[in-house]
Figure (tube, rainbow, N blue to C red):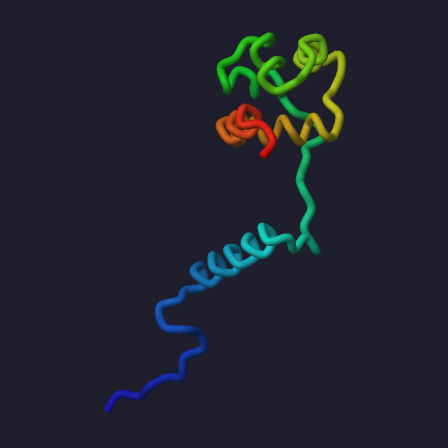
Length: 110
């Protein structure tokens, strides 16, 4: 007869699986408004030109689409000025989810 070892974790749940489930629970809690222990990461520097080129827009198109002045955009890209914290955060969102930003801005307020 074979000895049965007691289980320390649910059957079929690996350490990686437990980590994924924990991350999903944390993401859900964050989405539902739990913010304790979380902070947004906004980089101190950002490559504005690379973001604009990623979305394949001219400076004029990018400025109009996202509400920046063309002059500010030019200065950021040429390194004469850096975007403020809020602008940097918005640029991070544009870089990672340009379609979602476009939908949100073209849909208008609800």
